[in-house]
Length: 284
Ligand code: SAM
Picture 1 (cartoon, rainbow, N blue to C red):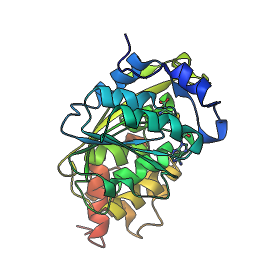
Picture 2 (cartoon, protein in one colour):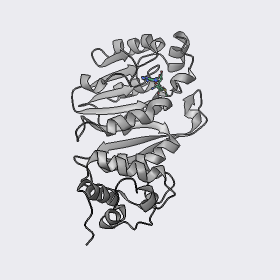
Picture 3 (spheres, rainbow, N blue to C red):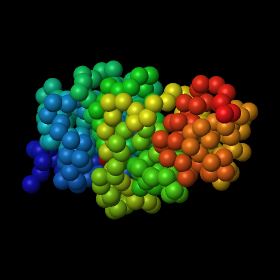
Picture 4 (cartoon, helix red, strand yellow):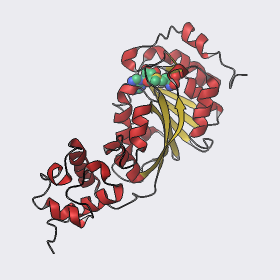
């Protein structure tokens, strides 16, 4: 049984001639039971506005609406998809708004009423960029409560990685500083049409009311960027451009100057950012 009374997605794609374009990262989900399952991973939707980036022919959009989203705002760059999306909007009067445009050029969150969730099968070429923007708003907490996002599995692992692992780096620290982040679903290439070369995973991020440890966001970003730009170097070398007395700052943060970036947890990176923000480290 279908989750709604609209035609199956294969028919929608044929009717509107929606042949996938690689340049737009188009790998569609055509199984509506699967899209409803992804929508459920976002949490309860009935009281929430939901932002979806890249609805394409609307498989996940239909899942979000079937799972009771109060309102869905969908931003799609490919004008070929709009007639199919209008059909969905008509079947759910007042619950779906579609904006044709590039998600990197507009601020769709300004059009939504909190509480807000973001749920998307993101185009691979802009997924990380969008995630970083959502994780770095001008003030915390952000306007959104949760992000439920499909990524290439390798990117999902970088978001949820723990210290000591190869995937651990800037993305893990940025995400985990102010969010709870976990992989909630794995999808093989065959789940998509056309099938990409790699596996995918859905990551669910919940915004924490405040960062896990205090730190100035700009200083923390500078430290983490410098540390992982030369991840094989000892931190005293990788970070030497940040302060002449970097070894003292490292020690003040509980870090051995000979440690490497991937051994250092979030708590100590935040301590280092705080030490650097207060000026020269005391040599005592
Ligand atoms: N949500 C659909 C699904 O799950 O079947 C489609 C997902 S497909 C991976 C990514 C979608 O994002 C495509 O429909 C593509 O046209 C759209 N897209 C690509 N770049 C975009 C951008 N910069 N802004 C908005 N949409 C974009």
